[in-house]
Length: 413
Image (tube, rainbow, N blue to C red; front, side):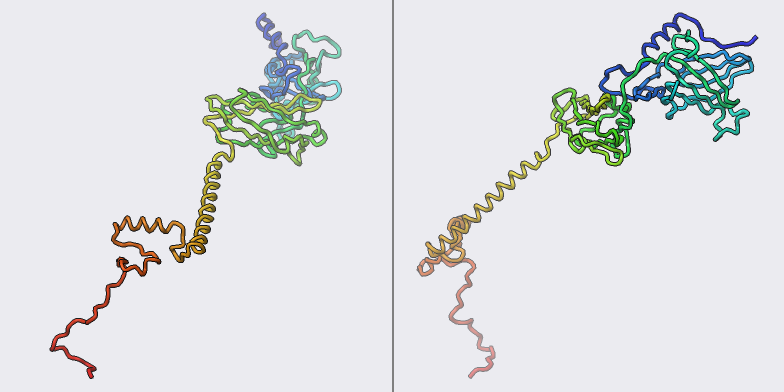
């Protein structure tokens, strides 16, 4: 008797699947932005609407193929052939762009690679057994699915190494429309914030570990888009939370509404300054409207451990000091020049005596020297009471020193 694994029919499992069917989509219709889902189990349809199946991961769909063989698809996990001889793996879900929009009857296509190698060593790049699951939104064309989430309609073995599976599931609801090809990063060829129109984890909401430091007053963001759709990008706006305490300004070619392309990215400069210090970071929510699509939205956070002054405020005091110094120098020069001309032309003074303030300097010197060394003015030269200054040479005596009688005299007449 052939043994086949079946899902346990329990009320709790029914409740789980019912709640799962309600929470199929991560985003709600009419959302302001589209964030990347929490897993790689999502896809974009041909109209760029997102379908998030993160809550479906691991759900089992079985198909009774007869001839002692069943097929099981574990959603976004793997594809298995189950028989009394054991399980045969037909590949595991690949996380890199293998859940894509389908064509024709299929809404989506999932690829599974890296299955068992036995008797399939000749496959390309030794990928082993592989499987392709064509997902149909709705029911099978020939019958109605009795399962709550869907059922397998048909299984076709192209060879012993590859199988095609037709899976019908309930995915009639559409998620937000994604502006594909749009990126935002910290470099012209990077996409840390937004990739393919989806806001990346860490910037979809406030995260303390992704906050910018206080001393970083400028952040440059590079935006790119497909050239044929770049004109749909509008001028960005921002919202600060809390509203007071952080000054934010947007500048650059991106802020002016210039269309970004992959060959010529536009730069969005975010200039922010802390006006009030706080322990928790400020949130800056930047929204980029796109015509016909849901807006691109991401959040930047900044720490404010201290107050930052405006550019130029630090030099403002030095500027005032420089102006005052220049004024004093000019006024002093004019005063000295005018005083010198007045003393020479009107007072008939010459030399150092013509300099303004020399009278005061002379008085100070006389006071310091206690009257011992007086400065002689030109008009007092003929006075009989002129004091002898200290640096005058002593008078030469009228007669030389008396010589002794024993001293020889040379050249005497």
